[in-house]
Structure formats: structure tokens, C-alpha cells
Image (cartoon, rainbow, N blue to C red; front, side, top):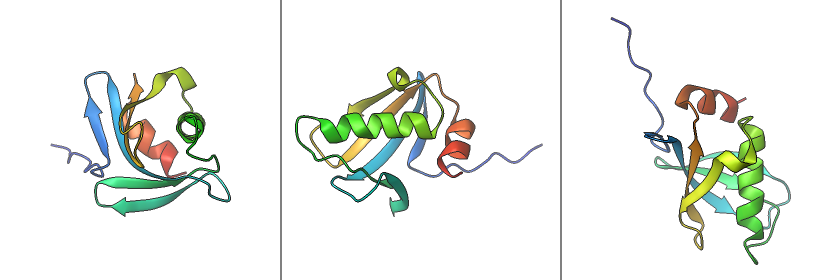
Length: 103
């Protein structure tokens, strides 16, 4: 029997795809993944300011590009007005998401 891959706690399987728990740092010098913020969150830096949802939109585009999915498949399901967010990647596979996140 094959051992099951242990997923980081910031990635969860969801009936509609995969969720990512993220801690966002807006107004950074560049868009990048820093690593684990805590055991439960992935830290991401975004250049956009947190004004008029600019940082949220930039985050969604960045994550979609990073994991090679269409931007319309990535949405915020929790934390719209908070630095801690949960994203849903519709129709995604956890293995593919993790592989693309850590290229």
C-alpha cells in the first residue's frame, strides 16, 4: 500500500477544488511567495496597495499565473478585507497546486 502524501496545512482539498490559506503583505517591492507564515498559512507579498481591492485582484492574478490556471478559477472565499485569506481554486488538484507553488 502506497503512503499518502502529507499536505501542508495551508492546502486543503475542497469539494470544488483546493483551498489555500494565505497571509498577504501588500505594498511589497515585488510579487512573491515568501514561505510559511505559520504552520497554517502561506505568506505572499503583493506589490499592489490594499485600496479598492487592488491587492486582492493582484493576489488572485498572481496565484492563477503561478499555478497555471485561468484567473476566473481563483476566488477569495474568506478574508476579503483581511490580510489572512482563504482562496478557492476551482477544479484544481492538490498535487498540481503544490508542485506549481514551489517551482
